[in-house]
Image 1 (tube, rainbow, N blue to C red):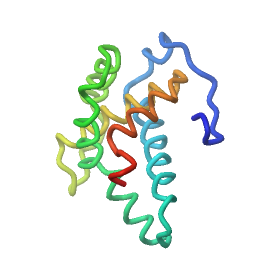
Image 2 (image 1 turned 135 degrees about the horizontal axis):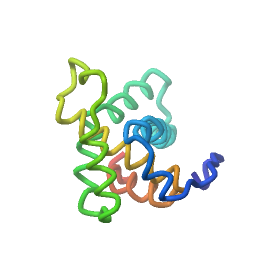
Image 3 (image 1 turned 30 degrees about the horizontal axis):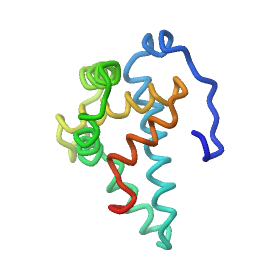
Image 4 (image 1 turned 180 degrees about the vertical axis):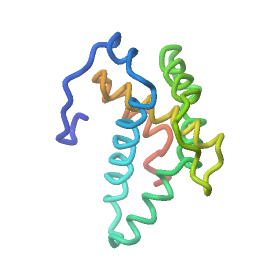
Length: 138
């Protein structure tokens, strides 16, 4: 992601489209978590408080809300990636403390973020993150 010292050779859109949506969500979850943690570092909070804040932002409920915030901004292709991620069947159930619908929608968001990241669309990742978590609301 530009400006953050992380580089990934962009994958062709065709190749990324062939990835299992759960694989896209695997990388997207990490990218989203990193963005949240970088945002939280702007505060002067102690590590324990940072961790609690991060877990409040990076859970199925919060990610489902983030998806709802960005859905009106998505292109047709991005919406398709979200749909594939939401409909993907993990071999495990949602954690007991998470709503299954939120968990599936969070997987859709993670798949989208993973797809954007892998295809080199880092500015779009940041744009959607900011739309979901405006700096003023942090």
